[in-house]
Length: 225
Image (tube, rainbow, N blue to C red; front, side):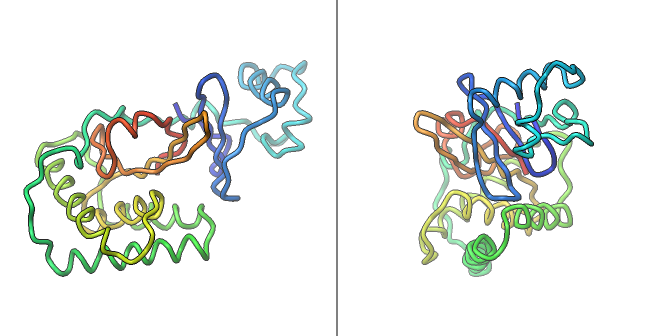
């Protein structure tokens, strides 16, 4: 389960350790063993005066003037069980406007990630998607079919875009590509360890749109957009 320190820092637990993502400073990080023990003690009893929080305050992990919103800000995502790219997909000719949109959005996202903070990029994407779509209350077969078809069209064109493939750029681009067509999907940012790795993919409900089920399940979500 994903939890948040504030709007910028989220964290998750994996193999008995905590992993953090700070979208304001564009970084993943872990705490020292001592800081992690202090942090976990504070989570269990934030009002307990015996907990030494000086190290947490020094590292801007908590504030003396605000309450840690770790409980109310928790956010989950359905466990992936299906993948659009692992389903049979008849070869279809991709219309010119679809191919154009893939080129434009991939180039746009690469540029945005070069000149803006990750926080700004994610907020702009969320705003755009909210303007274009309405999150469905229930997964519907027709909606899932449209999502799969649009995602597969994106995947067919993407290898021809002369920009190195990158899971974050491609997932940001796909969410925007789908939103332009009135289709709502989430960007999932996840982590794995031994060795540490970060990954991003697009998901609607339990349907993964640009990754295999196995790879998505091998990562623990740390941020959902």
